[in-house]
Length: 433
Image 1: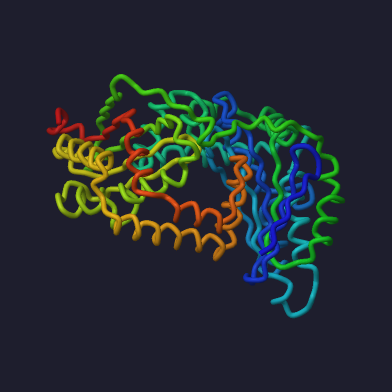
Image 2: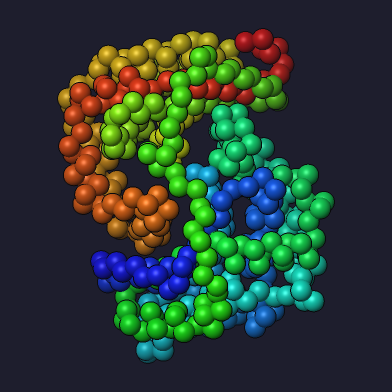
C-alpha cells in the first residue's frame, strides 16, 4: 500500500491510496465542519438532498442508471460525528479496471460522477427542489424518532448530552425535529453553499490505478477548480486538547420510559495529570476493563454475577472519555453500579495479571492488522489521522501497544474519574429503584 497526500488548495486535500490487494476502488469525498447548534439539522439534511439528483442527472433514477452503466457501482452518503466536528460523507464503490472485460477508465468515470453529485447538485431558482426538501424533512423526522426508539443508542447519546450539554459533542448529528419547520429549499441551499465554501474537503481515492492520471483528473476537474481556498476552522480533538477537571460529585440522572430492560451508561473522564501520550495505555486499559469477552465487565458483571444482558466499555479518543454501557434489569441498578465501581478500584490497584496484558495486546494488535484488510476501514483510519492531526502508521501503532506496561496501566487507572451516571428505567412499579 502506498499513501500520498497532496494539498490541492488551502482546505482541499487529495489522498491517494494505491493498493493492489482489492478488486474494487473507493472514491470518497469527506466534508468536515464544526458542530454548531444553529445549523445541525440543516447539515443533516444536505447529504440526503444531494443524493436525489445533480444538474446533469436530475433525479435519483438517472444517477442509478449511470451507476449501473459503471458495472454496478454503488453510491452512498451519510454523517459522522467525530469529536466536536461533523463529517458529511459521499462515496462510490466500483469494480477495478483490472477485473473488467476491457480497459475503459471506469474509475475516472466514477470519480467524475461523484464530484458531479457532491459539487453540482440539482438547483432551481437558487434553491433546492422543494419536492425533495419536503420529502427528506419527513425522512429525517422519522430517523430522529427511530433513534429514540433504539433505547441503547438513545441512552448513550443522552449521557453524552448531559456531560457536554449543548456544546458540539453533546449535539445529535441528526439535529432536532423542532428545527425542521423553519427549513425550506432556499435557506437549505444557502447552508449548502456555506459548507462547500468553508468546510474542510478531503477527496480520497483507494484502489489500483496510476497516480498521475487520477491526480491530474481531480486537479483539472471544473468543480474542484472553482472551489475557493479556505481556512481549516475545525475543532481539534485529541489527547492534548481535551483537558478535564475533576468533578466534585458525579451527576446522576434517571429517566423513566416504557422499557423492558434498563439502560445504564456511565461516563468516565480521563484526567491526564502529565501522563504524556496516553492513548495507547488508554486502549489497553479499556480492553482489559470492558472491551471484549475477556474483559472484567463481561466476565464479572455479565457472566459471573448475571447482572447485565450486555456489558461493555468504549474509549472515545477524541474527547478523553470512557463510556460504560450495560443493559440490565431495572431492580439491579444499585448492585450493578456498586460492582462497576469495585472493578474500577481493582484496575487502580493493579488487580489484573501479566497474562491478561499479553492476551489483550494480542487482541488489539490483531485488530490493528485487520485495518488494512478492508478498504473502507483503511480509509476511515487514515482520515481519522487527518482530523486528529496525529498521523500514525499501523506498524507504529502496534509497537506502541506492545510497549505498554502494567505500571503504566495502573498509573493511568488512577487518573480515571466518574463524571456522569445515566439510567433509563421502566416508569412502572420499579420507578423508585
